[in-house]
Image (cartoon, rainbow, N blue to C red; front, side):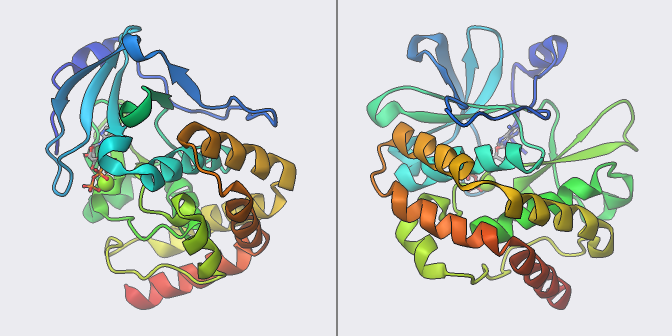
Length: 267
Ligand SMILES: Nc1ncnc2c1ncn2[C@@H]1O[C@H](COP(=O)(O)OP(=O)(O)OP(=O)(O)O)[C@@H](O)[C@H]1O
Ligand SMILES: [Mg+2]
């Protein structure tokens, strides 16, 4: 688990996370932090990652920063659009923002202090298993093949017996690759990395609710999300991306039901 040297300060201050916020149609929904207001700290030593670093913004908030220079544009696009969809579908995500210009353009995910990675043995203590279902439903809809244990964060509140799960790292989802998302049609990602022993019966309601919500997203709202994310990263194929994503959201119930079946078979 990476260590965040200054996280006590973040704890004192209280990390602000995305609760139910209203996303607008005329979106500047993603905060932009001024380049000069963000200062880099240490690199994060994660298993596969050597390129994310910790950063501080001048309002004393701590972020995990991923630069386009390292992650490439598709990953940044996927993070931004994935975050907008997460908020819309009530998938619990740390607060997000962008900063920097050119190759320093970066996605920022606000650090959840003392977060740990998913531990199957402790699922009994998770208070928001519905949200885990929402997270997996989102994965099915956006073709995210990367929901391994380190991309599900777990935080404690007052007691170690009260855990909450959070979704991070949508960079590998096909939201960042319009052509591949279109080519995927209504197919689902393989389950090579999904954690074992997911409590599937307990997450089904949340997954179904998120699928229902996805089918209700209007095209104009989806377009505003796609346009905003594409604009930030300079992606021109927004129409193709919108078409592919719209198609998948229209069939979200079916995609999610199939994904849950796949998960059941794989467990
Ligand atoms: N908002 C956050 N709060 C706390 N820890 C975080 C946050 N975002 C990321 N991390 C930590 O940093 C690690 C790497 O972040 P992330 O998964 O987003 O990057 P990555 O480069 O795609 O990593 P990997 O290749 O290992 O999947 C996470 O596994 C987690 O331990
Ligand atoms: Mg990751």
